[in-house]
Image (cartoon, rainbow, N blue to C red; front, top):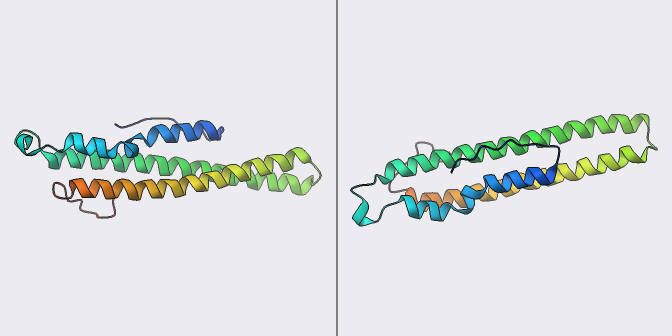
Amino acid sequence: MATSLSMDCGDFLEFQDSLQKMRKIDDQITYALNSIIPTESFKKTIDPSTTCKELHQQIKNIHNKRETSIKFCRDVARGEIEQLKKQCATDPDNVVLQNNMRRVQNTLRRLESELDIENVLKIRTCKIYNDKCRSFYKNPNINDL
């Protein structure tokens, strides 16, 4: 389930598509848990604590990668805004600069929204994971997902 995608901040729609692909694990968390947690008849052949621990690590890694990617692109957008502000200060009548400033500010707002979406997804995934795996795998750090 692990996904390795390179994140490009230049094209926001492409960036969003990459995020969607990386969010697949969150969208399919219930299916993943149902397929790895054995029923009573298979508990002797499959160790649910190991599978829950492995899934926990996958989820944690992908959440960290997505959050890092979003924050990186947010920082890139902030840097662009600072550059454009300096350029607009020297040439306040330049319409192209003003349009670029609005475009980058809009991208920054969208990236902030993606961070909010990320937090909602983490909470949802964490709740579903804990409901299914809490009796098999006790995470030493309760806030670690």
